[in-house]
Amino acid sequence: MRRLDRIVLAALMLAAAPSLAQDAAVQASPPTTAPGPVDPSQPLPPGHPPTDGSAPMVAGGSDAAVRRAMLPQSFAEETSEVPAGSIHVRVVNSAGAPQEGVTVRLGAMREGERDAPREARTDHDGTARFQGLTTGGNIAYRASTELDGAKFGALPFQLGPSMGHRVQLVRFDVEHEGRGVLLWDSRTEMRFRDDRLLVVQRLRIANLSGLALGEEQPVPQAFVPRNGMRFELPAGYTAFTSQPTMSDVRMTTEGNAAVLRGSIPPTLSEPIEVVFQFQMKLSGGDVSMRIGMPMPVVNSLVAVEAPPGLSMTVEGMPAAETRESNGDRILLTGLSRQPNDPPLRTVAIQIHGIPSPAGPARTVATGAVALLIVGGLYTALRRGNTTTGKRTRADIEAERDRALVEGAELARRHKAGDVGPATYEKRRRELTEWLSTLLKELDEAAN
Image (cartoon, rainbow, N blue to C red):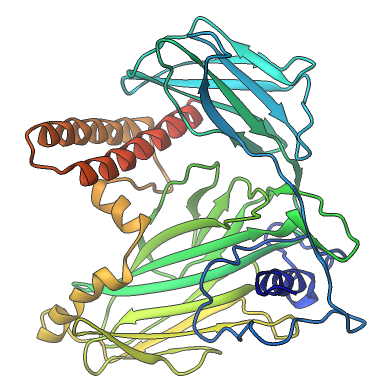
């Protein structure tokens, strides 16, 4: 058995393990079948057992074949086969079969302002047609369809002057119990900011329904938790923010919990990533906090920037290790669960020896931000691309205005030669994605 299949097989066995049965939305009996995927190309966290040895075994002592569903993909592409000013949206199921009589919604944003959405129903070929649309770079379109609480959409796009667009939407069946859903990665990253502890929580959620073991056939389904997935936050948390996504997944706060709502589609290649952060006010040199998970965690990593004298312990995890990078000290620990291990449902952290805000050690410690707060959330926070539990239309429109101003300034600096082509293209793509999320948010706010 290939190494990649061994890793996938291990994931499937974890999904089938009673100790890792998912109960994020409702209390459900342990799954009797184990559909499943993860992203096997991603590096394993510290403490994960090696996967280069003998292949994992299933009941009966023989290797189990991993069956992968061949899933169609959602896309939006320009094509000469569709007339200019037109969009043809085809809706298919997980097997690629056209879906007749499905309502398709076409949202639009014109120069930052939302146009009234259009709707059309699919014909016998599964295609909904929109005609007489405005072309040009001042308007962006996004097609979507819904089923039982899940929203399936393609990335936003613009219509050129000479050709139309062909869009395909994959509408999965929906289930609400989350069998075969795993919280594959939980990464808790912490740093100090004046008299507060900034906590960034990164989560990667895998829906394994596109994979199956042995003779079982995979049954790809989107998971929609009826009441959301609740991540319990420490008492006294403040300043909650979350990173927007291009899917219908969103995070809000309800009391002392961050609640994930939306749908988790089958994840054959890349788990869904969810990122949020909050702050804890510091009082004295110690802090204790617990982050509760709505489902058992497979891989968990905890890291904190660590000035001299600071120590960290995490319940159930090995002693924290010290890492050095560019003179900055970081403490980290982690673990991985096996099918027969007790489930990890809470990340309980204790930090001791925190220096005072005005002390020199704290000043040195803040230099570790580049090592801890990396990736999408930090970029989003710097450009104002965040969401909170309560966003009004005015909030979204103000953020849209910031994005448009930043885009105009970027174009001016590029034309003047102050910004090179590589930086310009990278930032332009980021701004395009940012504006696309705003189109989605304004579209949802109207409903």
